Amino acid sequence: MEYMVITGHWIDQNWQLQKPVLNFVHIPPPRRGLEIADAIWCCLEYWDIQSKIHTVSVDNASANDSAIYHLKTYAQRKKKLLCEGRLFHVRCCAHILNLIAQDGISEIKSIVEVIRDNVEYVRRSDARLLLFSEIVKELNLKESWLMIVERGGILRMRCCLLQSSSRMFFQDLSLKIHIMMIARVLKIGKKFKSDGFIRDVVAKMKIKFHKYWGETNLLMSIVAILDPRCKMKALEFCFLELYSSEKVEREISSVRKTLHELYSEYALKSKLDMYLEETCCSFKKDNKIEEEFNVLEWWRFNSVKYKVLSFMARDILAIPITTAASKATFRAESRVIDKYRASLTAKTVQVLMCGGDWLRKRFRVKKKTKVLFDDD
View 1 (spheres, rainbow, N blue to C red):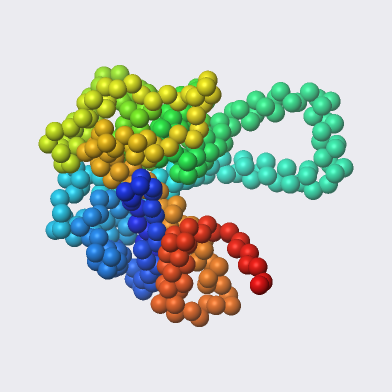
View 2: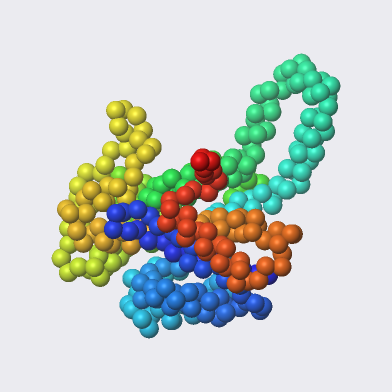
């Protein structure tokens, strides 16, 4: 059976990000875009939130592109979409980054397989491992080995992608890490431009990157600006790495114009300029990098000062750039539908998955939390 999980993301009155499961629904074949869109829309109508949808985040499948087209048509009948619908379709960032990394890895697949086979052969025996260590030491190969690893820059690139993206998805709503990661990937490509092989690999990866960035740079830019630590500085830093010097100012002006258009949809008069002109919040606290800065808490504290802007921030910062929350639900689904309970009906699975998520949210119970009861 093929299931689809639908999660809702919003920031409540207490500036807490909420992301409950709205439905866990079985979609029978052929599972085209229209069927997917109808299933999502039925869920929205059930919860009576069809007029409150700003964006929809999905994986990068062709059926999802068709589903978004239909959903956008349905939604426009109910309300005017933000920025005339330019923010409606959000592609899963994790999926895109994975595709980019896989493009690079595919080019050196044969090399990686040879290295893995040799490593496995050596590590399979303590005697071989000891002998290998002695040979490396005897031939003074340590420095040469490091040079080989360094020349395999594509592997370091993939490491950058995965480490930065995981931090971004689960720790930092501001996407500053995401922007820094993009710039870092491009810098690595420049570093190895003299190496024909690496240059060809990077060029292949950039094709997918620019397709992704071209469709999501507006959302990424707006969210970064709404981080009081970044504001316009984030764009200046990132765009210098992405565009030519003459194009940087044009792109920044375009984002600023869109930001004002977006704000005008929330209010006629604003404090947006005041917010942008204020000094950015410091990244450091007592000369140490502050890793626990909470963007939502900052906006909650300043919601009186920026009354209208805070409403806009609450809607924009709730937009998920990845389907990680939905993927987590599917991992739980594998524990519900195993080989011993494969005959559960779609309705029963739906009740188990949705009911479990709702109860955990209501009683604030985290997964894997053990509750002990005393026998009285």
